[in-house]
Image (cartoon, rainbow, N blue to C red; front, side):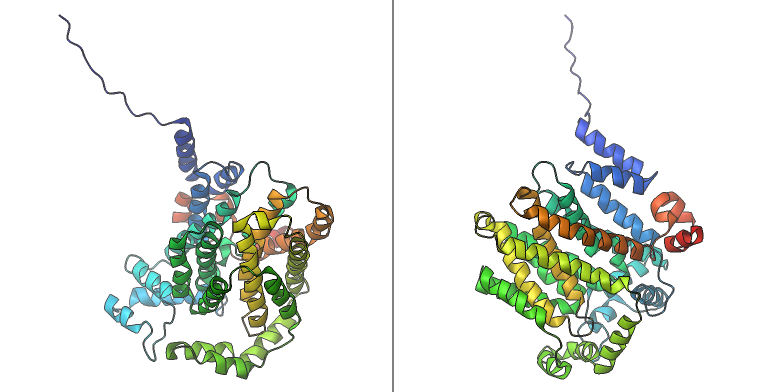
Length: 427
């Protein structure tokens, strides 16, 4: 009598899993090319993780600014100081929010300290920066992509591309502020659109990366209290656009109600001499720098006004998108006010990420709405200008290694040339 033999069937990857595995393996050969291919397959579940991996690789190959005043240069110097110091973890914790202490933002020094226990190479620190920034960056982009049904129009794609460039990966140059912006967008948009209350924790976590996100957090609580009042918020959005200046002394006295640990930062940001320095620096910029801001503002006001006058027949039936539009208007009104404080213009960028989130979803859903053709014709040239300018600005922070290299080569090659210098060499 023959005995029955049983065999265990080996686990075989599904086609989808195998496809994702192929991309992960190919990533170590050419990260940039594989990432571009993953973007063309953005509906696949692994595509956002490939993009996230590229953000980490970008951080490792990020060219730290050679100018002493740049944030990335300060991060690198602090990191090297940490690596060479005998500071203990408890000493670091005791310095947070301490009277006379130097740290009002916990995340950046904590990350720098922990990484410095393993290496003194700033490239590794910026890889970790890219890892953290990239997680929220990729999730924010795919949050919008997941809302798109069917094929995206050219205009919707251009809006999404612009959204991605409002706070791009090379903003790890200013890791504290811009990572906080990505985190706040991640937590707040998912709460407002999808009602995920547990994601609100990330809106609070943003404050640990940059203390100034107490202001956006206050706007969020104001929205929660007031609810959807689109007419009121639109009125504030328009009215605050005509504010010409603010009394910095009055603003400083108002902000002094914050805890004592923040007073040093508040005094610095609202100092009149600092304001004059910022204004003189702005006047020295080439024409295309301020025009890029004007270009994005033209699109913001054009599309926002169009959506507002079509709210009743569009957004009223889409609760989550209506919520996001109302919050974006309220946030923009607050950002308009704070933009006249030195460095306060950064909140306009944050508010743009919210308003462009609305634009991407809205334009993907209402591609054939009456009058939308005129909006597209008016907006496309300004969007293209902004995107080209931002890509050019990014060339100051990456070289051929980010585009043509891979993790293995990057590990052994310590120096790279900024891409803008290579481009200028051919012109």
